[in-house]
Image (cartoon, helix red, strand yellow):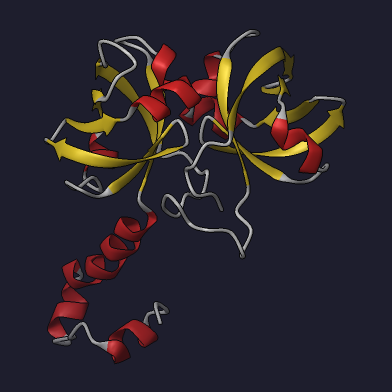
Length: 219
């Protein structure tokens, strides 16, 4: 679990093909002192497991599913990536609950003209945009951002200078793809209310109360 508060950016040192998967090596800085083999690290919002560590570099495997859903499928040596270590229970939750399980990719339609406070508009797949609401949270390349506005096909986020400076969003261009993870709460809400679309449930005249939530494993 992560918060979407990026700790630093790292640089991709190498990308190796391993059958249908890949192995990624990344050079970090301040996070390297406290990570160990087996730890989880969000790389551009994708939860990866540290496979090996040597000096200021760590490596991680990219599964077929990761390559299918995320921008890491096309990443190359020299790319700058956002890095965040897994959340500890005694940490402050400065962003929102981010799992590192990417829902899909979006495309940048509008970007800030400079590294000043401005807006970025991102085209969003239909199966993700349904979870996006105004003033809600979304993770873009692992960054916890607040939605300023949204339509049926895209959403806009306001970016402060610090975000543009400390993450790789400041280097992105129009047309570039980014990893998207919708707010986890919205997915649970959808799951709960999907029960009411079931004719059998409707015929039972079920009510959404504490007993109903307990019966279906939500409480």
